[in-house]
Image 1: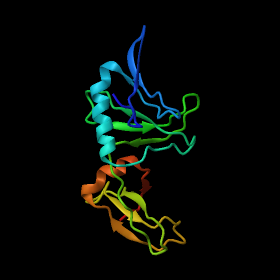
Image 2: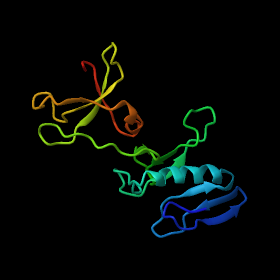
Image 3: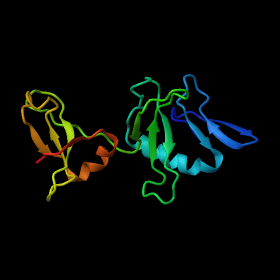
Image 4: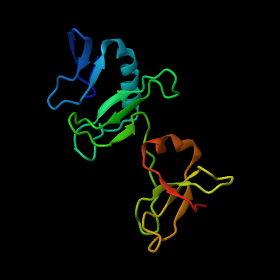
Length: 166
C-alpha cells in the first residue's frame, strides 16, 4: 500500500485492528483500515489519473485528507473525496477526488466565470451555465451553457443558485 505521496505506507496493528497510514513528514493524512485496502487503492488510482495536485483546505491551508464513500447503498460507493485534514477544528472543505477540472471561460471583463444553476421551472431547470462573477449592477451579462458531458466536475464546486436564471 502506498500513501498519497506515492511512498510505502506504514502498517500497524492495535487492539482495534490493523491499518495503513502515512509515515512521511509532513504527512499527507493518509489513513486506511486494512480491510478497506482494496477500496482505497482503487480510489487513489482514480485520483492519480486526474493528475491533480494534492488539495489543500482553504481554512487551514493543510493537505486535505482523502476519504472513500463506503456506503454500498449509494451510487458513489468507492469514490474518493477530500476533506479538511485538521483533526481538532476542521473547516468545511470538501471535494471529489476523481474529477478533472474544467477550464471556465472568461467573461468580457477577463475574469473566470462562475458556475450557476437554472432554478426557474421549465425545460432548462437544474441545467448549469457560466456567467460573469460580478454583481448584477456591474455584470457584463456574459452567458454560456456548461457542456453536459463535463457535469461531473461541478459536483466539487460551489454552485450559485439563481431564481430568475435563463
